Length: 476
Image 1 (tube, one colour):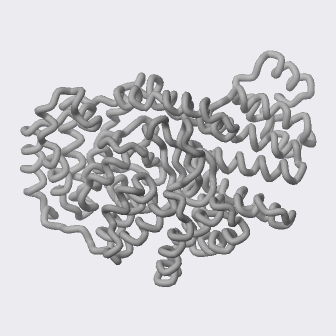
Image 2 (spheres, rainbow, N blue to C red; image 1 turned 30 degrees about the horizontal axis):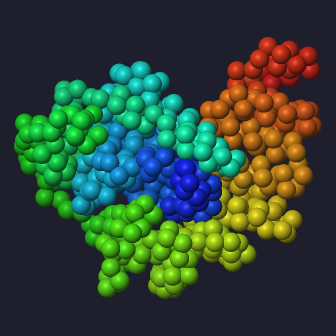
Image 3 (tube, rainbow, N blue to C red; image 1 turned 60 degrees about the vertical axis):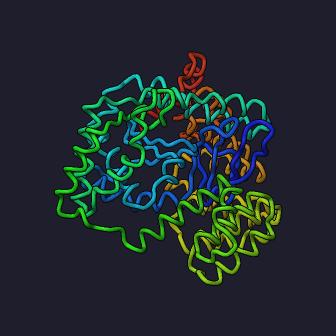
């Protein structure tokens, strides 16, 4: 994951899951980013490698459902409980606990196909209050917690992140038994349309059949919001067993990628468990990858690098190994050494925005003005593909401040808050930016746009109208 994660409370704000950087990470740098809630509660994770694997699994299913894969956002929720959900705005959430419970890609794809059935059927849209009462407040609250952590307020971050309304959001994501059955049937159809077996979905449900005998409070969150019954499982089994592709199996490549994803998640989220699960005698790639990550998470960078360097020698074209090495070096204050592996990761995967953010962060941390300017350009290039990444905007603000470009720094901070939905703070910084930027330049107009989109006060509107900014922006 790409960036330092942040555990609220007394836990340090640092550590990441591979290649990421999201609006909900606490501190950024080289690998997956994680925004942890209090006491190891739910988090949102960004990691380019894991997201790539998940989209490889999911995109054909989205297309079979008539959805544009580019418009469906996959949310990776760092939570050990078993859960998945579909929300308004074509968003699908997958808990890391659920991913780790799946035994093979077909099982995970079965769950994805089922949730796609909810999306294609418009089931989340039929619960308007769900987003208002749950997910949006959760994301905003977590975002503010991230900002508190960045500002050095661990206690404030703990309070905000610990009260992110995650449970409330998912509690509102209940589906009726009728909707569940329809999603089952639709998911089975999507899998068949993509030449895959529906066996994995049946197996997944079968593995948790016992949940139906528990009372509601004792069930996994997934089966509280997705009612399960033996009858439902048997109806689904009857359907998929009749489908032509029932005997289709996962390819060796897909199985290998699934194991890599699980190993990476275990290494970042459960390092001690990973070291027990992936023993030193296991010389396979996933096991060695997991151990390298686990040692890094346990603050043993030299031991982690000792495992990572041979992996890189064997797989020199793997951008995520280079990214992880750069991440480790950066986080353990070997910033000059971090530049080379991060450049290599970008060279190998130039379209990955999060890898560019990692490189940009390293460059702006150096004392060379030319490197700082190059870092600014890397951050700006990453925003072309990931414009709402609040961590990138924060880093850009730091870089502009280092260059003594006060107006640009305040505009970047306004963009940071705006991407998190903190419109009051966005408006304040945008107004400050306007005072420092040259009038009628693109940056000045963008600052004005943010003010107008951030519930401006009457005083703000009068100030804008006095200088003709409202009229000029509307007339563009």
